[in-house]
Image (tube, rainbow, N blue to C red):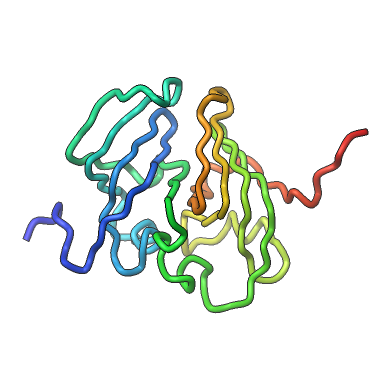
Length: 181
């Protein structure tokens, strides 16, 4: 059996993948644990994207190339936008367990992207736990708007998104925002 072909337990989901220089729109084969399970798998350092359409960030609507499949290094992914929350995987995996959660509207910035949305977190919001959590590289955020900092024409709304915590510059709670008079 080839390692490139998904097994019968996988299903394909559509997603937009954002790297430092490209937006890749395509499909990825995920296990029953969803995209969170695929990205949290320590045995693979890459993601295979099928029917991949590439666009450079500075020209987000112009198709540069189209491939049957490409492989992207997980560490180079900044964010992944999904069309449905369910594509993240079971709630126990997306939230990190079966616990009561609170919604925290946040702003996340990286060197290239600005994200606004809502994070579901159990207990009091704790920046250090989000950044130091060694069990997963990618953190789910909901009802999100992704904007490229230097390319304001690139805006993507998504009901569910994952961001790579290793690329985060800052996370701010919107409730701590100071409105200037």
